[in-house]
Each structure stands twice: as structure tokens, then as C-alpha cells.
Image (cartoon, rainbow, N blue to C red):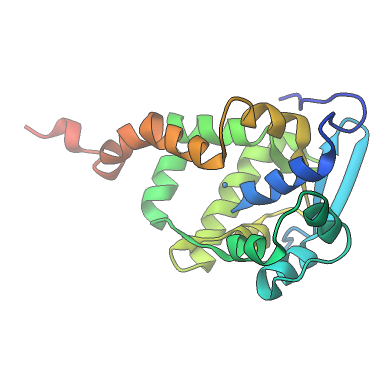
Length: 201
């Protein structure tokens, strides 16, 4: 699937969208992500995962990450807590959901935003692997830093144009999650959890 591109940095400046990308992560032991790369056409900006881990552990932002948070007026400690915030996700149910057409559609859409920098066509596979491995490592829950540790590629790209497009018309990422749960995923939780219910007499 072709990735959205446009010439130069996004019109609104990259720090705000970069922050949105970081927040979207809080959406494998070997070969884990080492760099989060914000992409817009030929525009590239990389933030080491080690800096994100440090932010999550200490609330201190350094380097380019620190500059982005300062320019966007965000509290590093608050973002650090968000990166460590866990979401309970039952492993078996989540694995089943990701294998349904609804789950595949969600992964396909998300893979236009998050994908391996040098292998964008395997974005869906990478997302599924990172989610499942991250939940396993987290004992039934997933956090932003856990997802990064589980991501099976050393460079996780975040497409700023695709992210900007996904956020247009939405008041925040919580609305994205809420809308998805209320539509496809939410309406099919029961059926996935009880796959043989439709055959009951």
C-alpha cells in the first residue's frame, strides 16, 4: 500500500504532530525498535527509543524529544506517565479480534501511520506482532513503551501526513478509540468471544 507523502515538513510544523505520534503509541525482545522516525516525504526526524524510555521512567525529556515537548508546551512528566500507562488487553480475545475482518481493517488503517521505515509493506504484520508480543510481555496489558520494545523492526516510522489526516475532524485520539469501539470492534466483541454462539440451537 503506498504511503502518503508530500513535499517538505507539514505546514503546522513537525513538533505538534510528532507529539501526536508519541501519544498515538500509548494506540519483540529481539529486533525491538531503536528509533522512532517521523516522516513527511523527504523530511525525516528521528527520536531514539532510549529517550522515550528515559522519559517514561524519569519524566525527563532530552535531545530532539525535549525540544519537541518544549515547543509544543507539553509537560514531559505527564507524557512520560502516558507512555507507561497500561491498557488491559486479554491476549486470546485480542488475538482473535486481530484476525477478524474488523481487526484486519483496523490494522491496515493504522499501518498507513505506523510501519517499518524500510519495509512499509509489512506494516500490518509488524503491528500484529508488536501488539501480541507486547501483551504477552506485559502480562495481559500493553503500554506505549511495551509496544516499542515488542516492535519487530529497529526503525518505526510515523507518517506525519497520514497521522494529520487521521486526526482531522477529531477532537483527540480518545475519540478515535471511542468511535472504533462503538462501531466495528465494540459490536463484534461478543461474537468473537463466543465464536460458536451462532450455531447454538
